[in-house]
Length: 105
Image 1 (cartoon, rainbow, N blue to C red):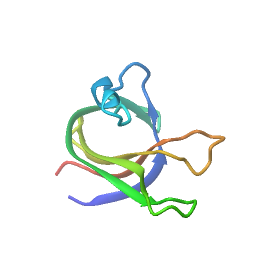
Image 2: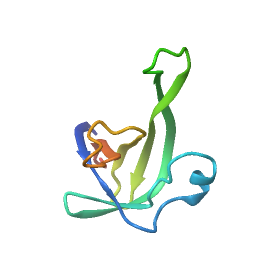
Image 3: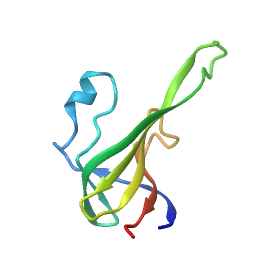
């Protein structure tokens, strides 16, 4: 089972966000999203972690840059997706990204 690097934007399906996560200050992980015209259903969250970085204005504080999720899908794939707190291209507004896919064996 090999992991493929993807690095493409995904489109969360409206009204499928995990509001319990949002209440805790995290982004609401979508239970479904669209990638390459295909609707992907999140069946299980396998792992969650955060990527932090230094303040961009010189303060010694660290800030959360990305929220990462390793998920399994209804089709048996394992995917790593992330939410970018400050997307590089603010005009496009693509905050959710699919990082990699590992197909079922």
